[in-house]
Length: 309
Figure 1 (cartoon, rainbow, N blue to C red):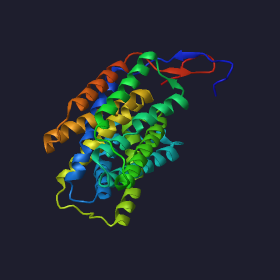
Figure 2: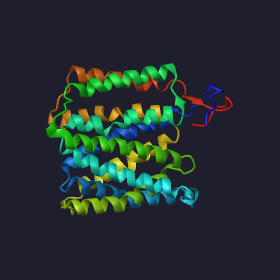
Figure 3: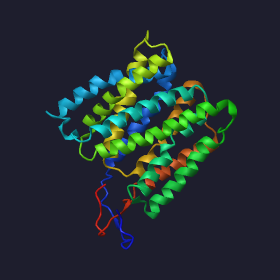
Figure 4: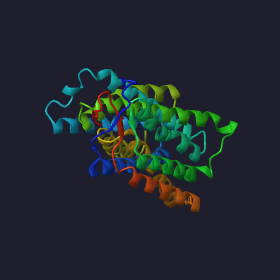
């Protein structure tokens, strides 16, 4: 706990090198193609989430063992956190995929990426990773950019209420997943951590897909294989690596790159043109990503010593 009588703040050594930043952005770019794959899949939305996990799980486990002899040994004592992280991620996928079909894409993007705000708040209030002035400015620019990206088409109506709530739930569960996997990443390497959380999400998604009564077995596997590789193996793999090195603020702001890439995909694939407001928002988010790289988060500590990131 931080003693009231010791209000000192120390600047933590920043491990946010170019590699974790690049991994974080590349992971978000890969994840931005996920909704497109889900739309193209010939199975139900929750079933698509299950096949994303089921097809990726053996690959991740094999990669984990390829990297070290006993990849899961450091996870002892962290099984509850990793299991809960997998369950939270399964619930996130299920609720977001269903919500997409019941609201506008703009609303789904806004609420589904609410971890953009929730995860930095966790960093501020719980992890005590206070932003520098530059990072505070970056957060403000990111918020303005998000508003421009989504504000023109954002709308609330009774017709979309159920979908909006499901997507907001998904964003909240995604934040829980980040928090739990961040704790696991303190002692577990990226691939083993992701492999374990992926395995933990298999059964919940299978049950949810069967209970929903969706079309479960695909006739065309290519789309689902692409979804598994792009979203789970590459996308989540790079993000799990990054959250072991970056502050919640950096991770949260970087999530805003997903709507930008998704908007570009929609423009190319479906002719969903981006107007001046959306393009201006993308520029603000890009500036925020550059600014947030400057300096390290301020971490409150009892004795004025910097805590590791």
